[in-house]
Image 1 (cartoon, rainbow, N blue to C red):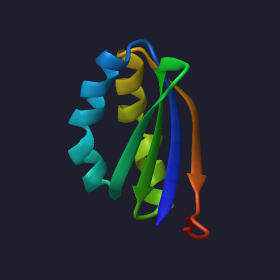
Image 2 (cartoon, one colour):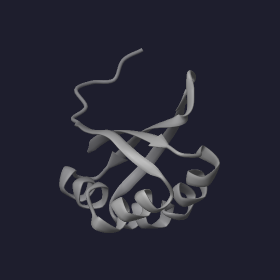
Image 3 (cartoon, helix red, strand yellow):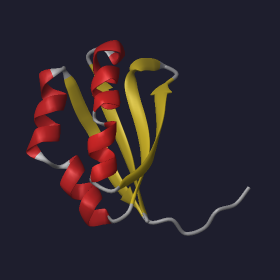
Image 4 (cartoon, rainbow, N blue to C red):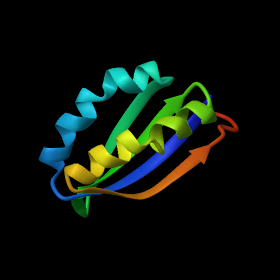
Length: 92
């Protein structure tokens, strides 16, 4: 498993959220196992998402696809960063 930490600057959270929801099935088909969505407490138009994927290759293919980038651009969303993470351990 690989995790992906994505940060987005949104023109409008309310405009972006339906796109995020609509793409759930596409993410699943692409190897996504789950997604945890957060909003920056100091900037409600910054979204932070932690995804779990079956492989880095599938995550990169989805995250860096022309279709994904165009969809984000069309609704005024900009990628701040995408970080691929390998889990080392779980702890309390």
